[in-house]
Image (cartoon, rainbow, N blue to C red; front, side):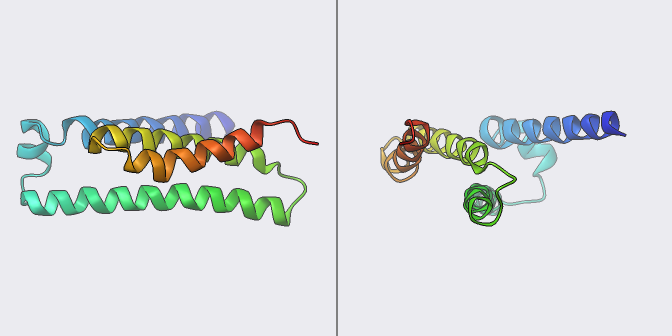
Length: 126
């Protein structure tokens, strides 16, 4: 059963890598536009992608809140690993956003606070 679970998790991860590639790199190619998105106008596609981005940011926030609530509610789960993972995701998202926006806004609003939080997590505790 454990092996089947891991295989299914791997399949889900692979599918999401394909989604990532489609949404980040190939969404405006003829394959995607003419085959997968043929029933949508360009405005609808832009709205769909914007909604997806908002949802992904919600998942990042949920992961960080999960880490905070775990720290408050349970001594059995170490929240540091949760925080580190999601903060690294936020740093990467902010860097990528700043590159694609061609301005530092996403870096300043996303990456910098997350990087500072990571730094505080990694500093030795007194």
